[in-house]
Image (cartoon, rainbow, N blue to C red; front, side, top):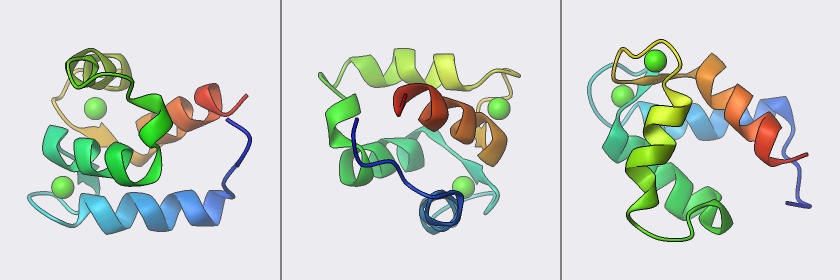
Length: 79
Ligand SMILES: [Ca+2]
Ligand SMILES: [Ca+2]
């Protein structure tokens, strides 16, 4: 990916989607899906890969994505 986003942009994107339902500081799977589809469509090659992506991102296995987990993912993908 060539369009690297600043930490401020990432934080505001994360907050925008994380606030949609449940915990406003955590991304649910539905929220992650919307975020990826709208902001990083190139990362989602096929719909079935979202489950795998979610598992990959959820490092501590609590079923939601924190900003730290999200940030690790974005940094890896934008290398
Ligand atoms: Ca949420
Ligand atoms: Ca988590």
